[in-house]
Image (tube, rainbow, N blue to C red; front, side, top):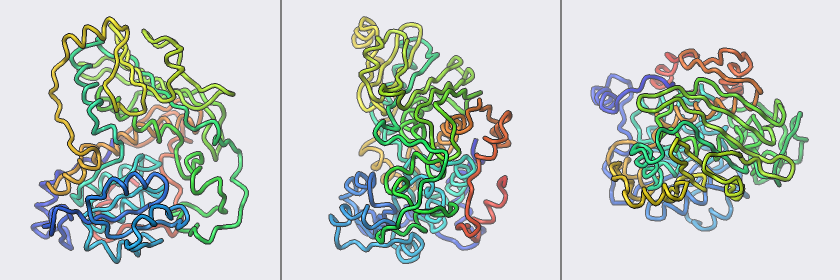
Length: 462
């Protein structure tokens, strides 16, 4: 669980009374000169292409990326937008004129960059996962509640039609109470899988990359192309593997549809344990207790490759194994009367029900739509929240709790041990190793918050 949330109304009341020190209004509450919002981007290579191209109706104030070569193609499309390497300089110069910032960097930099942006009073869209440890997630959520800014975590499926249909169908009982869910992905993909018992060998640094800034608040290590720009997610120092990549989308659907909190336990079977890299494949079983109208639940996670075959699940009720094997990323929600099948990492299309006769019955008597729909997609939800002075549907309170839940799977993969999580004390009750890994290893000179935000965070568990 994350820190006790503070309501936006209470935050704004405190700010208005001036009892929190320096008074500012979150950018979303300031009058905008036009329909365009003024956006900045931290992280402009790779996946950032989608974020940048998706906001062409807005005003681009500035870009920031530590790797000019990786960001070059996106920079070339917007040659008049100022560019920076250092996010601190970017924020110092442009925070007063920004309505929001979109952060799409490697996972290990999510915590310091999101915290810097919120300390500057900026609304923040942050790519998933929220961070690499539960400690960071809780502090990000606490800072968001304290500052009152508009936030959104980047699980695009959260705002899609299919996710809402899935919940409406399950709550109407189309397959009966769901007791088992299967989730699977080919990531880490076969042709880029890395497994190592040592750090990568040092290579000459590229002039276009500021390696010190890329490391952020993490301890020094020599540069290697096996880290940046693409393969960092395979290394525990920078990412948390497939489960905190594709798994964030999938577990978001499970949490949204079935109201799951933290599991009672996560039991792993993995290809091998390394201090440095993720396993080639992993099987995890998340066991959740009964919740209100929902019975106890098992979530079965499969990822990676065993030799030359993807690590697919087998024996899913009502689904032929050959159908499952034909899907790279998939989800299946099983109840006593059938299984809902989603051949995707997000519920981006209308779900299908097996056996086919059950699907025909549902189509003949479709469940009513009662959940609100999101206009403009996931980014649009955040932008609308900025204008309304509220957060998106996947705000940092929701995103922190979801990321912490998924990170328990990463802890099981990393240790090879069953994780039983005490959320109150942020400890794995049977694993001192996992408990230690729930907090990041940071540099002695790592960025630290200041002022009122620092005083608030000092009250949280260390």
